Amino acid sequence: MSRAIVAFLSGLVFGAGLIVSQMSNPAKVIGFLDISGNWDPSLAFVMAGALAVFGAVYWSSRARTTPLLAPRFALPTRDGIDRQLVAGSLIFGVGWGLSGFCPGPAVVSCTFGDWRVWVFVGAMLAGMLLYRSWPGRQPIPREA
Amino acid sequence: MSIVNFTPFSAIVGGALIGLAAALLWRMLGRIAGVSTILGSVLMEPGNDRIWRIAFLAGLVVSGLGAILLIPNAVHFELKAGAGQLLVAGLLVGFGTQMGSGCTSGHGVCGIGRLSTRSIVATLCFMGSGMLTVFALAHLS
Image (cartoon, rainbow over all chains, first blue to last red; front, top):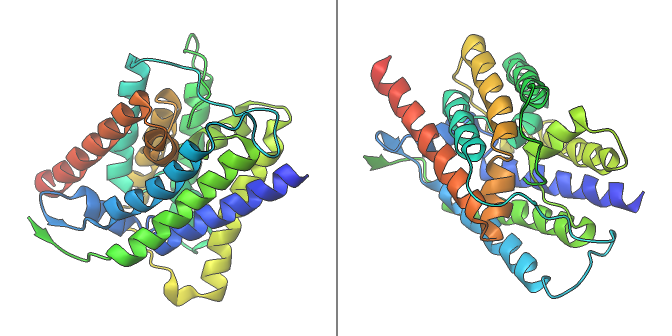
């Protein structure tokens, strides 16, 4: 139960961060990706802020053996650069550029009253199911 | 190229909140706050881990709902793509993030924060193809 409460709080703060930083604003995201036009570098600062805080906690807690509410840290197990990583990320980026949505912001903005967000979220879940039920695919590694 | 709509202060504050949320999940539960993997796992993997994952997603939804109900003027949202384009985009984002095992949060924040080579490569790939896509949309349409 305490694990669920912490996860809920984490989601709440995560979503607040997406809204404050305007990661949840597709036009803002596209402004960042539009380096050939009128470029808005703000999202690089979002990343810098997030990396500074997460990095500090991650690297300072590495010496500890366990998390406070779980038996162990669960790190991604897959190693090395493979075709799935590169091809999958390239495909994701095309969808990101077409819409301005990545998964977190899409979930956060599904209550903003625009039905088109639901079209995106429905299609995204379908795409996830499609890959995960693909015959002969690589098993999903513990990652992101 | 010219710089427009630059909001560095809210970007850093919002980014720090995202980092704080990811740090909380890591330090308390020992888990990576990667939204695409959390979503994909809720869909396809039964078991105990489903509970915290659903709770995390509920937190995301409640943050959006709370913001739009309580402080609607602070919520900036402008979506230009039409439904057809969003349908295609959603399929690509869903499929691509599962194939590449991560998205902006899992690779871009947590993975780079851990200095994972895989996540650095993944982030360069999706930022690169995202920029190319926006360029193509702007210049070919």
